[in-house]
Length: 122
Image 1 (spheres, rainbow, N blue to C red):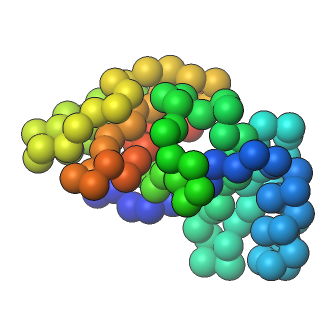
Image 2: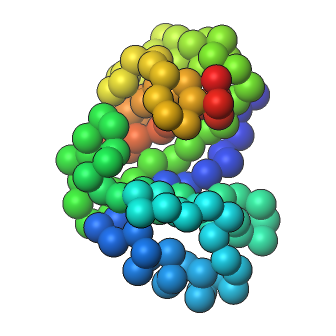
Image 3: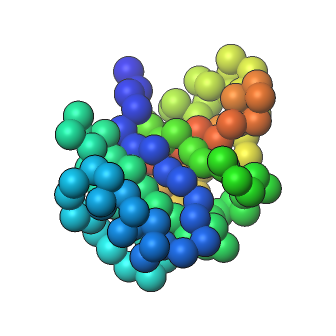
């Protein structure tokens, strides 16, 4: 069964957003680069800050845009969950594909909110 592991927010300035979240969460980033930063919540939930112009597929939301991310083990699990959710009426915004962080797809809920299923490093 899939579970929520990461919340991703699209930001204009990763460094400024990282500094803000590091201050309010009271912890340093686990990863930091010019295009991405990741912080951990006390619960273990991760918050990713992704530079808006590097998001694939390109997001149309401006203020308040983001994704809910579901980490799974392996490319087969991505394919399976993507097909399962598609079978339940979800729209596919990005078919399963390999990206620099792993194997992924993006599903849209009925309101168009983005749900990213991914297998890190796959």
